[in-house]
Image 1 (spheres, one colour):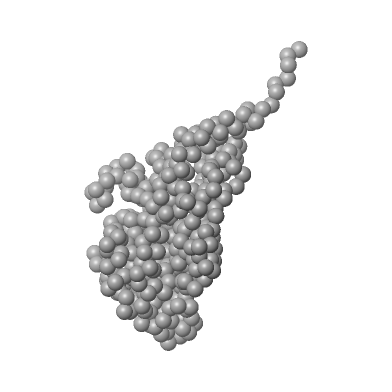
Image 2: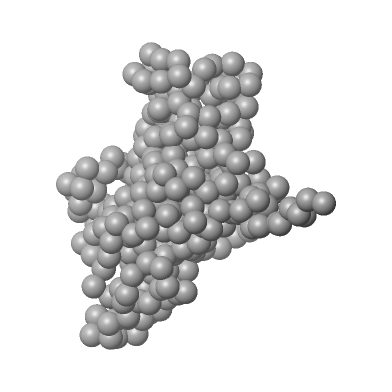
Length: 356
């Protein structure tokens, strides 16, 4: 009579040894992001970060959690996993900086069907690169193997970031005044929103191959779709240090008007002019190939504006100079005006985009 098969965790689909190898591969990436306030290293049960009281008199902590969305499907289709981590950091830290908070640290969560240590290293390498660009520490994270729930090659990413701002320096709608000026900061492309519609139009309807060269882009469709999200955190902090910034708005899901409306108080309206910029070719391609109406485009995509600053009218030239010096495309987008209807829209777009 044969011995009964002995069940093991590995036979059930969870490879603890692969997970431990992945952790060892991640440690150098986390080390790249280390700030002086970080205590210890990766591998413990929790990360430690010392708030230096000589830096902040009355610190307020800010926290944000986000993911990358279906942009991951493009990364999986192209078998290129070293950039979506940058997108992940951008989605988190640029929500933090809207409040005026300096991003301090981030912790990621990666769910996979099967742990492939080299793939995990590529993902976390992207997260680390994003943290370097944002100036925050990668304090740790979790990789969870979910056999039977996810396919072997499937994964998803999320992260939580924490930042700090002096109580007196918190930015928000209560600072916004009539006559303030809205300054746009250019996006690097699609960023990390609207990919369900972009994939449906370009891959399903237009049947464009990800590896195919697109003349308007000067590169392949896949390369355009995987262009990392621009990280504005350091730029926004530099701007707030040099100019009278009332608030920022991170332009993500919902588009320009809807996100800006979140930081405009009742009784005021941000009047924006489409004629001040031309959206990148990828947006025109999606609109044309999918016959997508302008209202749908504007509530789904950033259309070329990734972050917005509302500044005092006397500081417009200074703000534009700061951003230009930091190589951030920036321009005057509109103005804050009193609204005739206190309950009306808090941000509106008028005019037409050139050549769009």
